[in-house]
Amino acid sequence: MRLLAALAVGVFAYFLVGFVTGYAPDLRIRRTTSRSQVGRRQLWLHQAGLAVTPGQFALASIGIGAVAFAAVSVVTGTPLVALVPAGAVAALPRAYFARRRAARLHRVQEAWPDGLRDLLASITAGRALPQALTTLASSGPVPLQEAFERFPLLSRMLGTVPALEVVKEELADPTSDRVIEVLILAQERGGQIVKDILEDLIATTTSDLKVQEEIETEGLEMKINARVVLVLPWVVLVALTIRPGPFRDFYQSGGGLVVVALGGVLSVVGYVVINRLGRSQYERRVFGAGGHVVGSV
Image (cartoon, rainbow, N blue to C red; front, side, top):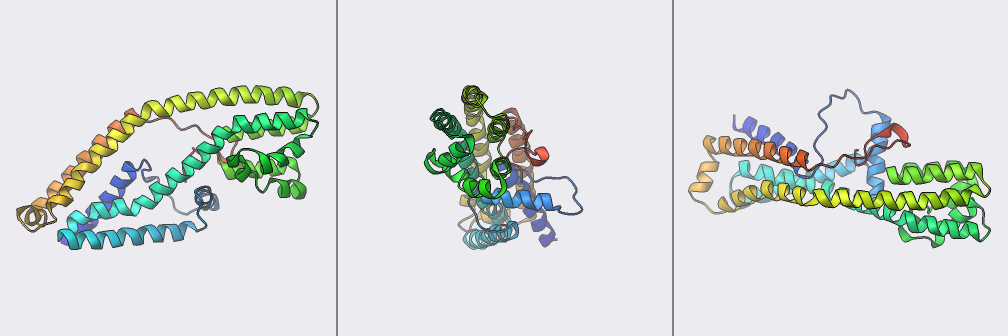
C-alpha cells in the first residue's frame, strides 16, 4: 500500500513539475512515436546546444532525479516528502535547456533587423543575394553567423533556395520563417525589387519584435508570482522534516500522505488558473514543416 501511495505521489510530482516549468505533459494518447516527433525532439536538443539523443537526455534527467530523491530521503528521513523535490530536480535539465534554447532563438530574432540591413548594404554595393547571404554568415551579427554557418556549403551543394529552407527548419522560429520566406521570394524575383523587399522587411520585422517584447514583459510578473507561490510551501515542508520530531512523524503516516496529496492538488489547480490568466498565445509556424507551436517538442 505504501509503495502504491509513493508511486501515485511520484506521478503527481511529475505533472506538478511540468506545470511549474511551463511544459505540461502532453496527455494525448499516442500509440507510436513517429519519425517526425523524434525529429522535433532531436531538433529541440540541437537548438539548445546539446549533442545527445532524446533518450540519453531522458535517462540523464531521470538519473539526476533519482540522486535527488536519495539525498532528500536521507536528509529528511521521509521518502514521501522527497518525491516532489526529486521530481523538480529531474525537470531542471529540461527547464534549463528550454530557457537556453529560447534565449538563443530570441537572440536570432533580435539580430534580424541588423542582419537585414547588412544584406541591404551588400546588395546596394553590387552583390547578388546569395553572395550577400554568404557574407552574412561570416561578418553579420553573431547569432545569424551561427544560424547561417552551413549556408555557404549548402548553397554550393543544393542551391540558394534549398539552403535557405534548411536554415529555416533548423531555426524553427515563426519570425525567422517569415524573413527567410521573403528572402526566398526575393531570390526568385531578383532585380531591383530585392532592395524594396528588404526595406519593407526591415520595417515589419522591427515592428513585430517590439510588439512581441511588450507582450512578454506584461506576462512576466504573473508567471514569476505563480511559480514562487507554488514552490515555497514545498521548500518549507522539506525544512520542517529535516530534523526528527512531530513533523517528520506526521508526514511518515497515512495522514501525512493525505495532506501532501491534497496540498499538491490545490497547488496545481491554483497554478493552472494563474498561468492561464497570464499565458501568452504562442505563434504557430505557418511556413514551417508541420506548423507546430513554437516551444513544443
